[in-house]
Length: 113
Image 1: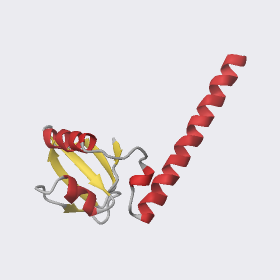
Image 2: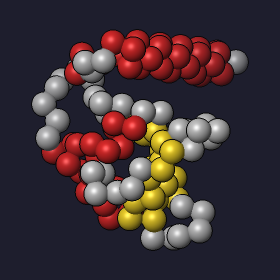
Image 3: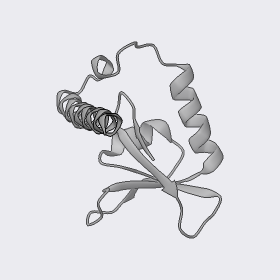
Image 4: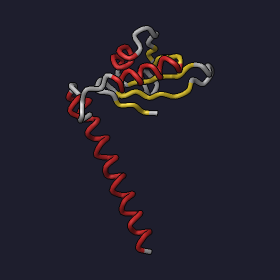
C-alpha cells in the first residue's frame, strides 16, 4: 500500500517473517522517523526503498488514524512544503489522471460496441 502524506510517501507491506509486524518503507528517512519516532530506522542502501522500519500493525493503524484526524488541508498538493516532493506528487497526480482518462475512454468504447 502506498500512502502519500504531506511529509513524504511510505510503502506498507506485511513483514515476510513476523506476522504481527508491517514493513514500512520510504525514500526519505524523515517521514518514517516522524510517523514512528520510537522505532529503529533500518538503512538498506541497495534496496528499492532505502529506509525501512519494522512496525507493529497496531502502531501503523494508529499513525494513519492520527494523520486522518489531524488533517487540516483541503488540497493535498498545496499542503506539501518540500519543492521536490511537491513536483514528484504532481507527476504522480498527472499519471493517475491520464489513467483515469484512459479508463473512461475504454468504458465509452465498450458502451458504443
